[in-house]
Amino acid sequence: MPEPSNTIDHDKCIRCSRCVAICPVGHLDLIADKIQPVDDPVKSCILCGHCMSVCPTQAIETGDFNYEEFIDLPDTLPTLADFELLLKARRSTRRFTEKPVEKKDIEKILEITSTAPMGVPPSSVEIIVFNGKEKIQALYPSFHKGFKMWIGGLSSPVFKPLMGLMMGKYNMHQMETEIIPLAKLILEGAIRGVDNLTYGAPAMLLFHSSKYAVSYRENCLIATTFAMIAVEGLGLGSCVVGMIPPVIERDKKLREQLGIPKDNEVIECLILGHARSTFNRTIPRKFKSVNWVN
Ligand SMILES: Cc1cc2nc3c(=O)[nH]c(=O)nc-3n(C[C@H](O)[C@H](O)[C@H](O)COP(=O)(O)O)c2cc1C
Ligand code: SF4
Ligand code: SF4
Image 1 (spheres, rainbow, N blue to C red):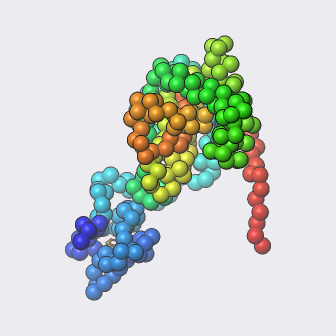
Image 2: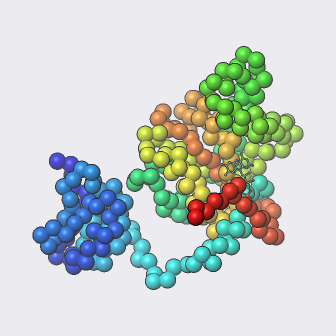
Image 3: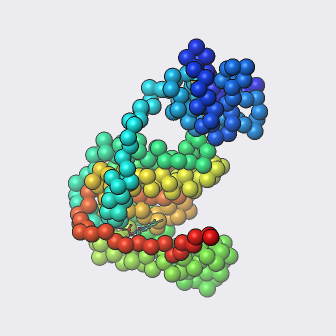
C-alpha cells in the first residue's frame, strides 16, 4: 500500500465538503459521515494543495505541505485594473545600468515564480541563478563557439542537409531566417565590444527541467513568464534570451559545468537588471488571429 497522501483531523473537520468539491481528481469523499481518501488509483492525489487552501478549519493535510507556509488571503484581491498597467508597461530590457541586482530581489522573484502553474505538481522546473555580470560573461566563449558551429553547419553543403534532416523543416526555417542572422549580429558585436547577447545584464536565470516530467517545456515557459512579471513589479527590467538555451543544450561540457542533469532540457533564459532606458508609452500588440466560434 502506498503511503496515504492526506491526513484528516476528524475532530477539526466540520464536514463542509469544500475539499471534496475542489479536489481536481475526486480523491476525497464524505463516506460514513467522514472525509476520506477514495481508494481508487485513478483518483490518486496529485498533491496540488487545493484542499488545504479551502479548508476553513485546517483539518486536512496533504503531502509535505505545512499550514504555516500558507498565507491567508484577504477578502478583496488586487483587480485586473491594478495589474493591467504593469503588464502593458513591461518591455524587453536590452540596456542595463551597472547596478547589481540585490540577492533579496532575486529571492523575491524566485518566490513569486514558484507560484506558477505546472502540468502536474510538484513543479519540475529547476533554475540556475547567475548573479553577477562576470558569471554570465564567463560563458561567452562557449556560447560563441556554439553560434559559430551553427553558422558553419548551415554554410556547409555537407552538413546543411544533415541539419535539415535532424531539425525538420520548421526549425530549419527558423534557423535560417531568425537564428543565424542573430548569431551573426552577436558575433560581430562581440568583435566591436558590443554585447548583443545578454546586453551587460547583471543577472540571469536559466530554466531547465527533466524531460520525464509532464508538460516540462510549458512548466519552464510559464515560470519564465511569472519571473518577468515579478521582475517588472520590482521596478527592474528583463528580457528572454532564446539564443542561449539551445547552445547550452548541445554543449556537453557546459552542461556538466552548470550541473544540468543528463535527462534535463534547458528551456529558457531570462536576463534581468536595472533598466537604463525607460519607456514613455505602451506598445499596441495584436495576436496573429483570434477567431470566435459562433
Ligand atoms: C521565447 C522568446 C525568445 C526571445 N529571445 C530573444 C533573444 O534571444 N534576444 C533578444 O534580444 N530578445 C529576445 N526576446 C525578446 C523579444 O524580441 C521581445 O519580447 C519582442 O521583441 C517584443 O518586445 P517586448 O517584450 O518589449 O514586448 C525573446 C522573447 C521570447 C518570448
Ligand atoms: S492535494 Fe489536491 S489532489 Fe490531493 S486531495 Fe487535496 S485537492 Fe485532492
Ligand atoms: S474542507 Fe476541511 S472542514 Fe471541510 S470537509 Fe474538508 S477537511 Fe473537513
